[in-house]
Length: 156
Image (cartoon, rainbow, N blue to C red; front, side):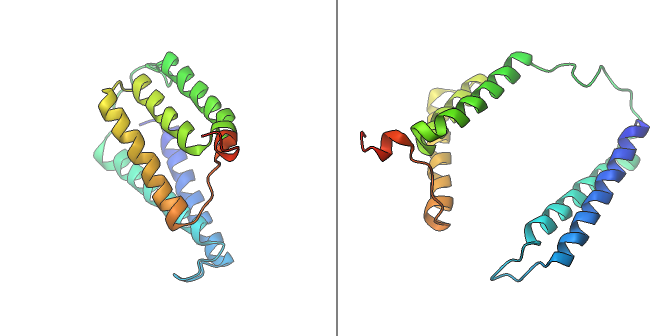
């Protein structure tokens, strides 16, 4: 394992500990009303956990192994460009078409481009994802989703 990889693992470990400590000092709150440091504290804990797992893998489970190729070797540039384009289209179409329709179409597009699936599988996954996200965020947490100009003007 390269020295830089070990060094960066220790840096992530240190950053996770520092984030956890600083967010603890800001205040975690309690279960009923979390404080401003609650989410950063969880993020710091996650960083420490992942860095610790990587340290275990680096030093004990996977001894120095030969590297194949460079960092960018094997990247499917066509798929990367499609995903970035789809994300840009998602951002631009969200205020116009609304969360539900744009997210549904975005998931269908990604499902066909990245790992081609059958239309039946994609429709089920897309409908379940949009439905569950509305159930959790729209109904349970009472967040507002952008409806888009089409639904706001009551065209549909």
